[in-house]
Length: 184
Image (cartoon, helix red, strand yellow):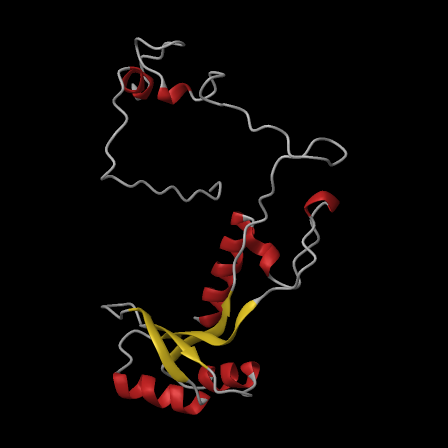
């Protein structure tokens, strides 16, 4: 089960392009190379428990690893175990704590609390220099899905957003929209 979970996670990282967070990741092209090693939050681990692990079993596992509960990240439900953020005592070896935790039958996995970053960088002119201007995709016609019947260019299958914007209808200050896009 652990091996299948590990392979699934590695496959997802490879597909998403986030595989560069592992120290053994293949080198990227020179202009995008990331020379930093994988980073983790010092003295923190993420521990996932098997489904149905009791409070006593989780306490026992934390005792074996000499770690203390910092936060419950995911509550356990039917078919899904809890996930906790735990902290190591000062001076405790992280790899040893992981091995001790994984030796407990109630632990599905234990790993460092990895710091994930994206490899996005501003567009650069050939040869370096200042970032190139970001294209205005709406004005240049690239965002065809934003246009409507009465917009230029016209698109009967669009969202009609351009028409709404032209009438001054731009939404509400009480509505917040967050877009997290990693290209997947």
